Length: 325
Ligand code: SF4
Ligand code: SF4
Ligand code: FES
Image 1: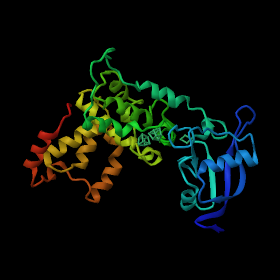
Image 2: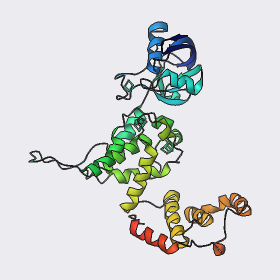
Image 3: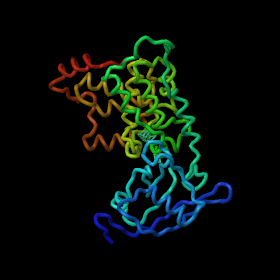
Image 4: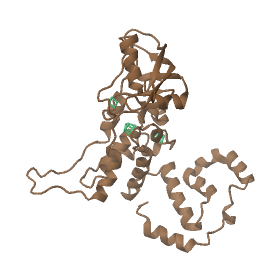
């Protein structure tokens, strides 16, 4: 049906329900509604509560995409309910939509989850400015526009948790700080006024730190504020190298091996890179390496060619590298 430019269509919702105080297992409730093109996902949550079941529970506060309370999943996609239009959801997924909390295993009541792990990890990266404050300043503490731009990239985070609960590394490794905590760490590490010395060390530790990110980009996909946490993680990698504190692990050796290969050949030596990164652990890659060799993807060290522009590449590396290995 169409009213002017406003369109209406029937949508079938399958909604996750669970009350930790009463239910042994979660279940799904079906609701069918006429949805207008003016509505956002939060309107649907409101209508479920107001028109169908007053016990249905979810978080929301600002309705303007700034408090981060209303993040849920629609058909498995992280969604800020007050920002995402129903028209977009229907375009993406059709007229059968499943509404779930960000993490079903952390559900407390319907869409409400226990975000305790999220906040603990947030706290672990010292998410505030550490600096000696002059209590009676005579002038403003100026930050140059160029420096402000760096931290602004991560300053818009609303702590919604969408990236954190979309991250597969968080799911399998309870120590891993997660993308939102790393974005917060980057926010303050890139602030020229900050003098903290522990934050970078914390994010450089094994299991909890940036080296355990598997670079799947789920966090970038999930973020409703375009923070792009994986990009911040990559910048934190670089910061640990620049500070000379990057620990030796497969990921850092991979970065160092990459540089060595480019310095030596001006080209990437795939086989040498795996050997450099994995050390003795390379044995487990032998079956794959043999297949790659047969297809000409791996070149033996003695046959490794050199780039025609090797001199220029070596000069570029020398002039641009800030890392201390
Ligand atoms: S890119 Fe890294 S931090 Fe982001 S979701 Fe994947 S594993 Fe998690
Ligand atoms: S980085 Fe984006 S998705 Fe993650 S908590 Fe912040 S705003 Fe939410
Ligand atoms: S209600 Fe605040 S971000 Fe949605």
